[in-house]
Amino acid sequence: MPRPTGNNRLKAARVAAGFSSQQALADALGVGVRQVRRWESDNPPWPQPEQAQALTRELGQELEALGFAAPHSLQPDRGRRTVLAATAAAVGLAAVPTQSVATQPATVAADFEAVTRSHRHLYWSVALAILHPSTVAHAALGCALLTETVGKTRRSVAAALAETYLLAGRIEFFDMREPDRAGQTLLRALQAAGEADDSLLGAATLAHAAFVPGWEGRRDDAVERMVAARTYARRGPASAELLAWLDAVEAECETRCGNTRTALHLIGHAEDVLAAGSQNQSPPWLDWFSPVRLAAFKGNTQLKAGHLPQARDTLLGVLSALEPGEEKQLTVVLGDLAAVEAAAGRPEEACAYALRALDQLERTWYATGMDRVREVRRTLAPHQHERCVRDLDDRLYGWSTTVSALSR
Image (cartoon, rainbow, N blue to C red; front, side, top):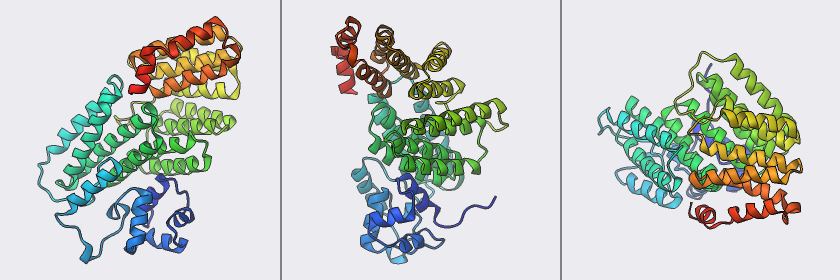
């Protein structure tokens, strides 16, 4: 299938930044939509200074990274590293270079990938306060290596860098609950995936980017990013697991936007995709999804849809199927089971599950899991004078839990 024409880097950055149309970006920049069309053409003209500043501000990337070729008089020189450093200071992360000179040996790619792989494994057990700074520093190293590698070595470094930024973005969104920061980091991941020409990493990044508006109820923006994610997935040999996960992501976004019927349809499709299987292998970085995780998505959607008996059965099945090392997911499932019992008018059972979630959160912090517990507590307001709810409050606002929440 022929590749789409035009300035695909600018198009991808626009969609990832939440501008679902050329008109939306034009309005934000204060230019005509015709100008944006020209920038997204095969030979985009170099923007005027004020337009250039607005573009880099709105999309969070340098012009070269957005697909513009600088006129000869503006070609970067050795001072480029100073520009990159300034950009890093502005956004808190290193910008992804688009030009390089071979000064590193080919072995540097395998060395950089090894650390990326270790961070991927450490995510499930190491406290985010320790892992996140290390991941961000590793990304800065990857940006430096991109300026010193070429060819296949550079593409390998770029792919590992994209995965590193993707991990940092996941931590910022799911563990730290900083969606704006996560959005900027995911932009870097998408840019690095583009440098690697890795469409599957691009699909994963765009799907994660859909969570940001999806959780805020901005359905149109979430759908736009999912359309882009599925487009990228079609370009590569996507596995059944990756395709099913895309359904699950869109289902969660639809659930957050109140469209539970659509969400359940998507989950049913994902179950069919997994049952049919695929000859394509899942990439090693797709370690956050499985049939059990899909069932967890389903249980949450059934809960939001008011299908309480079905949600209870689904979530109990997930609870029994979770493997050691899935402690973060365990806190979410326990929180959802607590929500089921609270909605069913069974406060004692709801508090019991919530307390189990708090026990696990003291050992393995997960902001998304704590959000679930707090949501349950709000629904238990009519029972707040009962002993079980007061006991939950004592734990929810105990010293160790409160300090953990504030310090992470």
